[in-house]
Amino acid sequence: MGVVNLTPDSFSGDGFSDQVEPAVEKAFSLIAAGADMLDIGAESTRPGAAAAAAQEEVSRLLPVLQALQDCGVPLSVDTRKPEVMAAVLAVGADMINDVSGFSDPAALSAVATSQCALCIMHMQGEPQTMQNNPLYQDVVAEVRDFLSARVEACQKHGIAPDRLVLDPGFGFGKTLEHNLTLFRRLHELSEDGLPLLVGVSRKSMLGAITGRPVAERLSASVAAALMAAQRGAAILRVHDVAATRDALAVWAALSEE
Ligand code: HH2
Image 1 (tube, rainbow, N blue to C red):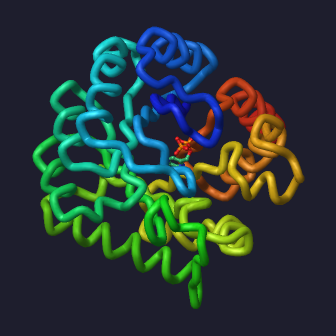
Image 2 (image 1 turned 60 degrees about the horizontal axis):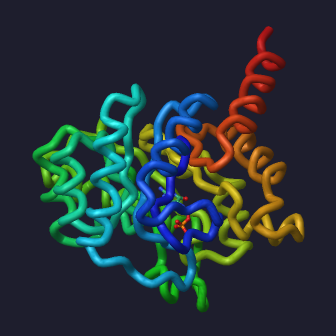
Image 3 (image 1 turned 90 degrees about the vertical axis):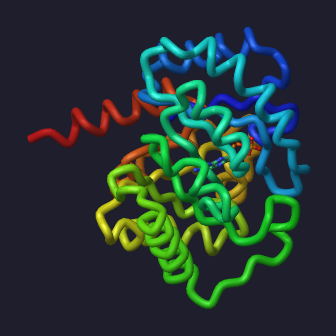
């Protein structure tokens, strides 16, 4: 899954705010590099980011989604707002990726009547303050319990489990130690057989491990993506598609009998 950020303030430094053409070009370059799907977001959720208004998100997203309608890969939209979900589903979005796990009471109703896929992510707190002092008794159990509860809520809304993807939410209300524990025990999160999405690309946990700034985390991101795939992740959310593809191709070739 290649990331396209339509934001002025994404942590990864690759956002295109209000610039439709470069964003669409970026999307096509990710597809050419081997992305099987795209995740398009119009609100930064980096720690401390200010929330974007729903109308602002919609006006950033719609022209890009329309330009990508025949791009040949499924389009996921990264949003927490039911109004935005409804607007992007009306122009054919294939998946809604909600970093709050569809916690807004109206969010599941917004997606229930469509056939879209849902990515349910765990986050402790809100982007504005989530990294202030994240606390868990048992991070794996709490993330797993949250995800199970959201799967159950989906079922109550008539959303079939085969539409669901789960994500522990690396860096979202988690210390380095929490992130490392979740990554090492990733297999414990896919217990009910639902596919897992992992997004660690360029994140600060990789900066903490390598001591490198965000612009120099390519090798670390590829290494982490590869390990996530080896631990069963079905979808890798990455900024650097070509490099990740190469690593996966080498792994696949060298693993064959
Ligand atoms: N990470 C980011 C945003 N959305 N969605 C899912 N499901 N999983 C993630 O790990 C995830 C996500 C943060 O990355 P990015 O979009 O590059 O940054 P920003 O939120 O600052 O735009």
